[in-house]
Image (cartoon, rainbow, N blue to C red; front, side, top):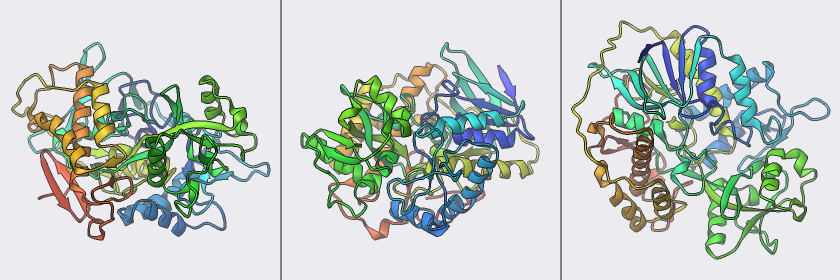
Amino acid sequence: MEIYTDVIILGSGVAALQSARILSQKLRVQIITKSNLRSSSTYYAQGGIAGVQSPNDSLQLHIQDTLDAGGQHNHKEHVDTLVTEGIKSLEQIIEEGFPVDRLTNGQISLGLEGAHSRHRIIHAGGDATGKHVIEHLLQQLTTNVTINEYEMAYQLLKNKAGRCIGVHTIQPNGEKNTYFAPHIIIATGGAGALYTHTSNRPNNFGDGIALAYLAGAAVTDMEFVQFHPSLLLANGQILGLVSEAVRGAGGRFVDRNRYPLMEGVHPLGDLAPRHVTAYEMYKARQSGKEVFIDISAITKFEERFPTIAALCHKAEIDLRKNLIPITPGSHFMMGGVVTDGYGRTSIEGLFAIGEAACTGVHGANRLASNSLLEGITFGKQMAQYILQEEISHIDFHSISPSTFYEELPLLQKHDLQQLMSTNVGIIRNEQKLQRAVQHFSFLQDIAKLNLDHLSMGQLELLFMHIVALLITKGALARLESRGAHIRTDYPQTDQALEKQWFIQKQGQLIKGSVWHESTKTRIHA
């Protein structure tokens, strides 16, 4: 079936829905999501939304915290936009009725999280902020929005002028559709499920990044994968996340004997940046220690953190002992499809937003609770740009590049996750990275592969391999340790690489020192 519309949005998280609700005021929008509408990473996000609210805080402090957490690798102008425009977007949804948590006097309750110098984290429903964000945005959608669940985009379509004009999709039963529109938006989220332990949804494989890469778009900063220090671990299984807000409320990293693990490691202690705390938890577990969060200093824990408490009860963890067992795991992708401040990629007509995009706003390591802020801020920026964009006649005849068919030596999902966790995880070195990259050599001409014969499961597996390769190649190229990228063979930070972006574009690895700001400015070697 062929469907023509004004905007196609791939994904259903905060960035997708914030964009959709604004765009749908004037345009017809088709949302395509490969799972249930309420199964995005946003929906399960326990963390809050960072925003300056108190007299002892300032926009400049929030900006500085973001740059410090990001290893000074951030795109400074986009950080300024995130913080200054972000507070306006946040106040707007609060005015609309977004149910933020408040103190008994009616003031907004502000939490503290890692690497923040002030209490500025806004929550809704305690540790269920993401769910409330999604429900709020869904209520704002107009009748111009059509939602297509359990449908996966597997190929972006371009016309002879090189403009992106549509997308091929597939459903679990193999049924396929083709959508055409002047604006295609990738908002598919991150790729945490490339690893064995993750806070992400189990099907977050970086589909949108793979789609864009196959179409010829530039991607960057793929080496920067944030690992969260505290995933809830029970009987060898990850059951969810223990939010950083727990440590903001007084929780501490300890071993079984309640010995504090962050003592003397970092000035911020248990609220150090995530790459620091995740590394320490990793080292403790590698040495044979069990790792916990001690919640004995938190009063009314179950009332303040109902989602986490429910997960603990489900896992038969006795909260009366005040110890929650944890392990580090993949959490957030700082890299992604290269975009400017309006979501424009290096391909005309193709936009990217949220975790699938890379504006450079997060640098080498995302500051806690800046991701939901990013979704509502840049989703609004992009939507407003599209609404005022003047478009001349568009040719909707797609070109079919010469393609070939062959059986691919794809690893099974578990094997690929194990490969990435072992060799491209929290700790990296050249030997491990080379061991990983040799498994992906068959992807060299992948852009010419005919995808039409593959099932939905095979396509997901292929996209996993593509994104895994992009992460591995980025990690091989960055000969330093910065933020979430830690190499034992290059343990120091190299100042010469502070503003160095490693851009990947269909087989090319391009060293770029200037962030592109428009689709008119193409990225060249």
